[in-house]
Image (cartoon, rainbow, N blue to C red):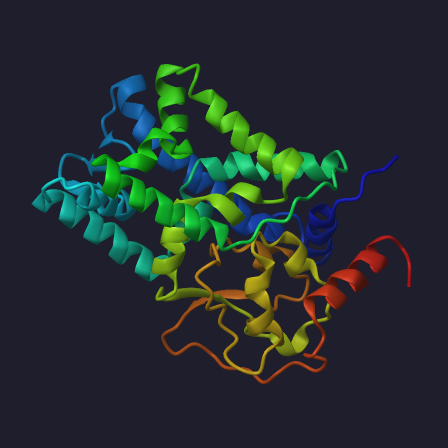
Length: 312
């Protein structure tokens, strides 16, 4: 039996209209960014090329530039550790960077666990797994609050004990056997339990950067929303499809303003009529509401599903 994949069908529409390379431009850039980020940290311990010393939580680039995860820094402060000036500088630089490029750009462009969850999602659709235990997206904020509270109570950076990003990095370098169990658990969660469960519903790091992302300058925008054909390709490829509706079908700004957006560019790749573009808040264009803008996300997805299966 042929397995039906909404994501594959959505990308196929973009490929048919623009060619394979243009329909995968942002996907290729993201994967290159993720591989490069991981390689920079692994080059030192594995090959003796010390571009970066440290890890995703705290590092020094070329022996000069300090970088620190602001979420880790906040936990450290709550744990009662005396603030260190260089750590404060590093956390400030990272915060400023993600205010510019989009908070959850970290999730889509840097975090190596994103590759794990994307692979689970791809395999889920290939195998035709439809089981999906619904989780409230606000759960990640409860986990975020729990991690901060645990640091306050325990006097330690609590999240680092179970952080899949740190565990994955150590596993690649040192081959930590038990550490892989956390990565496998994340993979199986997204594969067998709930669609986009980890990144979309549980990860406190994504929740934290989502808060920063509410003020970010760089934005995806539906700058040509009047040309939308309601094919639903953008909704089907988006990891957080709820963020698209106000920009594409609303009466206000065409900018996607939700902090949940990962600025991944998947909607740009998939759209066969180039409705979306990467832009900024600064002088961002404003376009009139598209005809038929009252069509909801569920109706759009349903019409796309019927067309992709050859039904009217």
